[in-house]
Amino acid sequence: MNIDPIIKIMKLSNRLRAIERVVQIKGRASYENDAEHSYQLALVCWQIAEHLKLKVDLAKIFQYALAHDLVEVYAGDTPAFTASKEHIQSQHEREEQALIELKKDYKEFPEMIQAIENFEAEKDTESKLVRLLDTFIPTLNVSIDQGTFYKDHGITLEKYTEMRGGKIDGIDFKTAGLDDLLQALMSYFEEQKEELFAG
Image 1 (cartoon, rainbow, N blue to C red):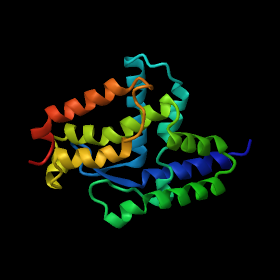
Image 2: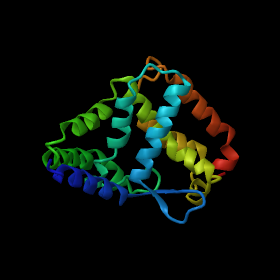
Image 3: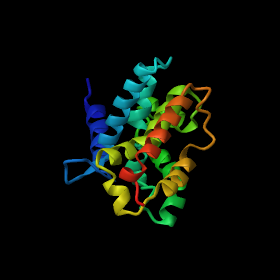
C-alpha cells in the first residue's frame, strides 16, 4: 500500500491547525485554531443530534464538520467582528477560489470536496445543523470565557445579532427540526446579555 495519500491529508490537517481564529480558550493564552474548532463542532453536533433525537446521518455530520473550514487553508479565516470590510466582502470570492485549489490538489479524495460543496448548499438537515452550530459555537466559547472577547471589542448584543443573522438568514431551520435549538440559543444569549456582551 502506498502511504503517500495518508501523508498528504495529514499535511492538509496540519495546515488547518495552523489557521488561528480570534477566540481565546478559557485558561489558555493561545487562540483556538481551525482544527480545534472543527473537532469541537463535530462533537457538539453529535451530542445535539443524540439529545434531540434527530433523524440524521452522523457520518454526514462528521464529514461536514471536519471539512467545512478546509477552504481556509487557502483563503484564510474571516473573523466576523474584527476583519476589515474589504476582507469580509472578499470572503466568498476567496473561498470559491480556495475550493478550486482543493479540487485540483485533492482530486484523489472527491468525497472530501463533495462534503464541502454539500455543506455550502445547505440542502439537508445535517448541513443545516452544522451551519447553525458553526455560527453559534464561537459565541458559546466567548460565554465560557465570561464575554472577554466581546467586551474587549465593544460588541453589543445588537451588533452581534445583526452580524450573526447574516450568516443564517434564509435557512429553513423549521423543516429541519432545528427551530427550537435556534430559539434556545438566542434566548440564552439574551439572558446572558450583561455577562456576555459590551454595554
